[in-house]
Length: 202
Image 1 (cartoon, rainbow, N blue to C red):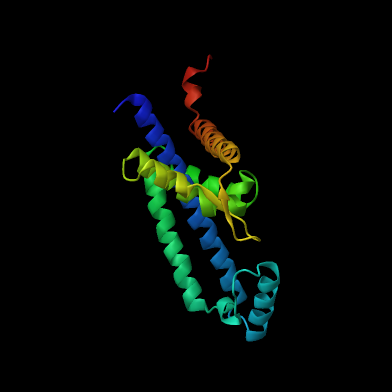
Image 2 (cartoon, rainbow, N blue to C red):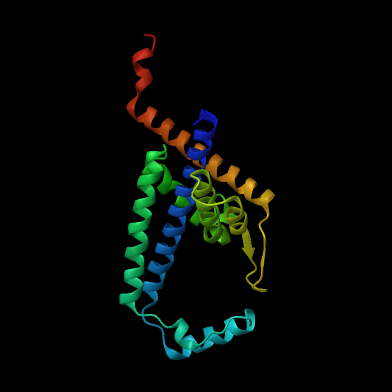
């Protein structure tokens, strides 16, 4: 295995761990917010069903699809938390600390960076990056890899080829955001430890 190929695998794994962690982080936060709402009423569920039917008519909905109870939502929160911690450990194995990953997720969730990842990217990019990693591991064919790279329109419900130019742009944004967060954390740690005091000229 050449160093170039190894670096490519590590890069893909770093991106995969980051996007997977963010996906489970934002789903965990979303369901935590849902817990604050309590159990919704049948009337509320009917209104939501009517709204979704108007916006996305190609998918059938019923009020029961929009009912929830606290126990189910709590289980979803805990499940996403466990998966978030799993991907955090994987990220640490390729050089992204838990502190950095937590800060990244908070930034994205607060729309401070990589906005497209928060909008829809966290639903697609983990799948794409997983396919890329499996391809590098010779676990899937090139055709299977290519078939994974599709986007789904929220309103039309049709699959279209992925926009690679946009994807590359988002990849650079993710990597740049992780780098900036890491550098800021290093600078803060240096200031706290006063490591340069030993070099001061008196």
